[in-house]
Length: 147
Image (cartoon, rainbow, N blue to C red; front, side, top):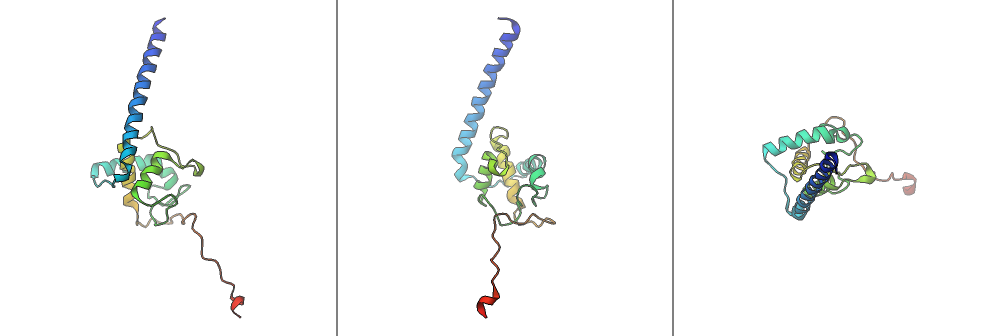
């Protein structure tokens, strides 16, 4: 074995150890999902906002009003509107809709920060928000039926 092979083997061993640590952290996080509440910690919310602006705003806009991704400020939520639903969507993604999974990319604390920040966007009124998706408009009534 030459030095390069030894270094490659050591790197692979460290990478596997890191992946195992990450997998355990995510598994522990998933076990607590049902009891999670949005954080009110200003530092975590600030970190969540920074992560949102960097990773989420390209699809959801910096104000959460929605572009390719849905509007996060209104009461129309496709995959569930509570905080835990938001955490699960960030963690698992919605591949069929183009929503990436952030599992293994973001730490559990970063996912909580982003989800908590998104929670603060609810009920805000951004200019020109994306209209609700998967919401059926009331059917038009044919007035001739009543004549």
